[in-house]
Length: 308
Ligand code: GDP
Ligand code: CA
Figure 1 (cartoon, rainbow, N blue to C red):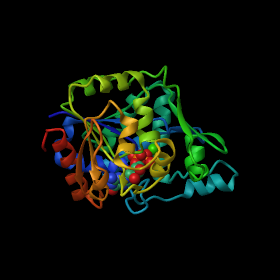
Figure 2: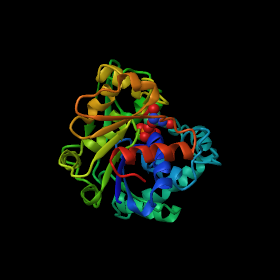
Figure 3: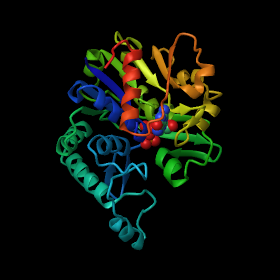
Figure 4: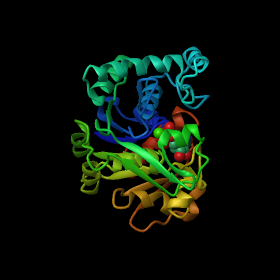
């Protein structure tokens, strides 16, 4: 059974860790978000691809909730001392990855080739594909102005309410090599519990990816990132309240209209489980540990009629 999963960073990665415990990793292709990538200190940083890489290869700091375990911050302290750009938190171990990625890109590798090199070196058994090798960047429109994603998220601590998002480069972006093949070959397509607007939105804004999902033959199952109408972490609930008009399962499903067959929601949202045209599956969705993530992944596969 082949699985294709669309993922953002931390929330997606936690789910994927459960998925890889439930099915053979070699049967899984992950399509990752690249629209929060940034160039900083001369380096190409791909935060969501790296969250997936670190989490799935046992290198993530699960207590802090992002970045690498055993991280130190010497390089960033030195940058700050020199008056360099230190607002984006890059640890020493993390920087090593950005150095290698940036060199590969400078030598002419595509982002998907560079990602494959990193994933192979770190021992990732599933395939990790950037959604696109083309420049694709999320911008958020807020009452305080329009900001590049990381300026808003990290720089401003996502304090501004978001009226709209747009994805620069989306009309021209082509899916990275292997993405359409993975979607066509999949027996199940999963949308991980990532932020619908700023993690999965940009992937779905790549027109050929959206078209492939709209014309899917395999069932597509999404997992809600909200529990009791609240995000476990981050701004997804505030964004859904403002842009979709609420935080019920129907609002969570709205950005995926026409693209999903089922939505996995938490017990805490069971009262609002009726969504026209989308089957809902009600299970505990808090991923306290790998075992809980594995049960959630199994429920998502089950919802697709493909039990693990
Ligand atoms: P980012 O790119 O690192 O911001 O992460 P994602 O977009 O992949 O995931 C963020 C989302 O994951 C947030 O909206 C959280 O609510 C959701 N999330 C995190 N942990 C859990 C969990 O245990 N269960 C569920 N259902 N959602 C979670
Ligand atoms: Ca992200």
